[in-house]
Amino acid sequence: MTSYIFENISEIMASHAHSHATEEKVIPPAQTGAIWKTFWILLILTAIEFIIAFTMHASSLRVAIFAGMTIVKAFYIIGEFMHLKHEVKTLIWMILLPVIFVVWLLTALLYEGGHLY
Image 1: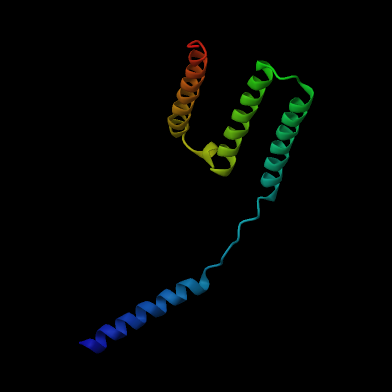
Image 2: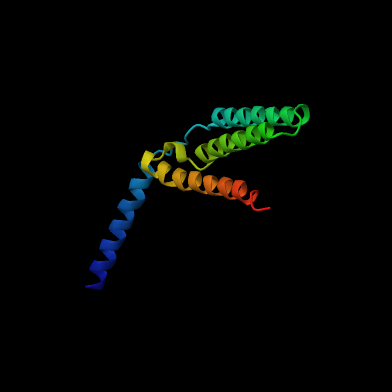
């Protein structure tokens, strides 16, 4: 009985090793083009932020521009590096809506907090 089990195990293992020997491993091509594209887009946005920081006077417009560009960069980074842009739209909205509400809450609290004193 035990010799029969060992014979079956050796046959199974031999067929398993044989099936792997015939498979070809294909390495997908590197996506260096997408990485460089992301690098250049983020570099350009950061350069624009530096230009605005050193040429514009401090004002609420400059703060609004920085906040907007930071949000754009954050969403681009999340979409590219966390692969969120390839996900289902429902998942994207489940993540995006709470972020929008938190930003709205912080804006409202900062605005209303200034009226107390």
